[in-house]
Length: 307
Image 1 (tube, rainbow, N blue to C red):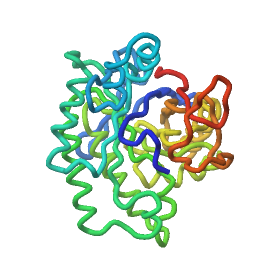
Image 2: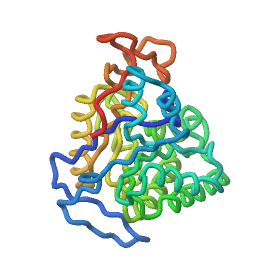
Image 3: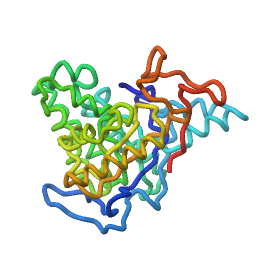
Image 4: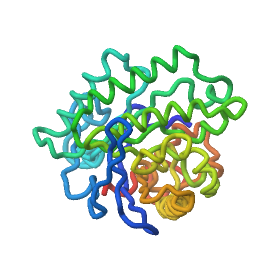
């Protein structure tokens, strides 16, 4: 389900630990050599979160042009950290430079600032992924694009959400795991960077009907072993409390399956008036209506600010 946020951003994210396990981190790995970081280190904590300020953010120009109360309200979006989306609309030979430029802008001269990015590159994906598998050419192009994206990140401190709408991997023709294997390639490449934390998308609690086993069917073949964890709610509007409970259950299921010390992030950009996808009655779930009044339900409004 493509999000109304599209290439704009995930404007809110809660970064959750693994409450039922030790807080050890799965460190980035150069090549195939495993390495562990000290268990008390959280790569996302105790650092500034970078905010991109430029025309690449859909809220930035309206914010600059606004005044008074409107400017104060737009600041809640324009000045919030966002996980910028990147996908196939950016050519392979341009993506590294665009990523470097975005990171430089968001860090604003502070190399220790954390930048948030979202990679949405797999093709075919969403409904098309249920009808056909990637061709050999698409597989090669995907890997080259991922490699270039990684070169653009370099040693920057990055929190990266990988392939939103993850549940579509479950509908690949004939049960093929090829799409998941390509996501796994990306997870390995990005996790090998020195300061990048990878979170593989696992849909949302409402999408998977709160079944941790379904999340594992997405995450395990997609490379959760190399990632720091998983992401919830990037394109849905489910309640943060539901996502925390579901994410905790998935962490526990992963640990039982041998994937310990995993963590999760929750998108809170649009779930201030939360609703489940199966309850929505509007015309377009991907672009659900914006709330117009306080107390209105079944509509999109800002959730908990990034934390």
